[in-house]
Image 1 (cartoon, one colour):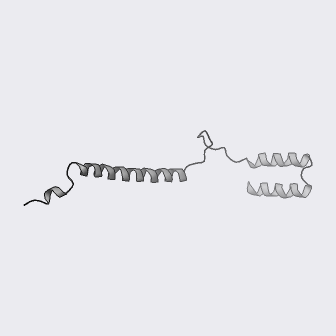
Image 2 (cartoon, rainbow, N blue to C red; image 1 turned 120 degrees about the vertical axis):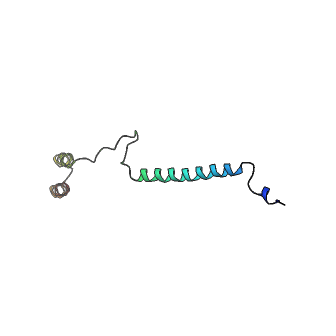
Image 3 (spheres, rainbow, N blue to C red; image 1 turned 135 degrees about the vertical axis):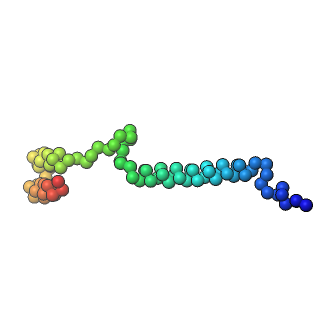
Length: 89
């Protein structure tokens, strides 16, 4: 009379499927959150500390002056690079 009653999910399989769905959606959410945090995080060095800021314009100008003094740059090249550095700061 009730032959269809035992053809469903008996024996606790429904619990296994429910746990599987919770794990699936949980891993999906954790993965998406990890990806989002990675995309929106600040750059770090190999030790996990925040990366050092770029060389300041004054330090770059000092290096440029040293190179000019050693004769590595022509006067025109020095003037062009100095103008670029001053425009950026």
